[in-house]
Amino acid sequence: MPAYSFHLCTLDTSRPIKNDHHEFPDVGAALAEAARIGRGMIRQRVRRKPCELRARLDVRDEGDAPVARILLAELARQMS
Image (cartoon, rainbow, N blue to C red; front, top):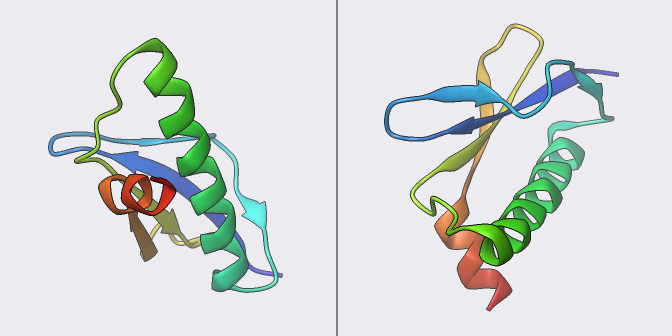
């Protein structure tokens, strides 16, 4: 199975959510997991501090190339 990693990207930074790769059967499954992570980040940050909604979550393959992207602002709109 291919391995993917998740990175939180803002205008000037990009940092991995976790430093390891996770195996998923396909990019769709990895994208669903990224959406779950993003929703959790938005929920947590609403309680503690405002979330940077201009940020995005990138799904990257084993070669560190972005294969999918989730905009946190769009995810927040879907949640409301």
